[in-house]
Amino acid sequence: MANNDDVAPRALLILAAAATIMALGAFVVVTEAPAYAGTASETCANCHVMDSMYENHYHAAHRPWTECASCHLPHNNLVNYYVEKGRQGMHDVYVFGTAQTPQVIRLSAHSKAIVQQNCIHCHEDAVETIMAGVQPFERFCWECHRSTAHGPRGASAVTLQDSNLYPLENGE
Image (cartoon, rainbow, N blue to C red):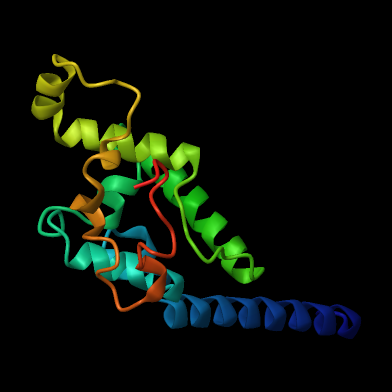
């Protein structure tokens, strides 16, 4: 027979574990956490700071064929894909949760490399033809094709997409 001194701590431990499981379950349901494992662009737009990016992508030429993940995550293997998805997600949660979200969201150097590789991967035949020409090789695809992925600058009702507020890096 169990000692009464052992029953109370055990019951509290079971109660704490049950409360933790219920809290995590509620968190998963309320935040729709399983959606973040998918690729739907609408999931990326759950964060209001991405509204203008999503809206511009929605009206852009690439939308019928791409989701945010198509360009912004590596596709060389499944492990790299989910590691980068987690890294970017945790970065976004940290920046948003600590109120450090910049007014103008720009790609990091790391993310620029991923997007550039994805442009080249999807448009390999066109890039091969371009590389045979006189085009300088150190340019990013979006320096010339600025409106392709996210539509024309300023197409959004959200002022942060107004090209008058932030010109292109090359001065255009």
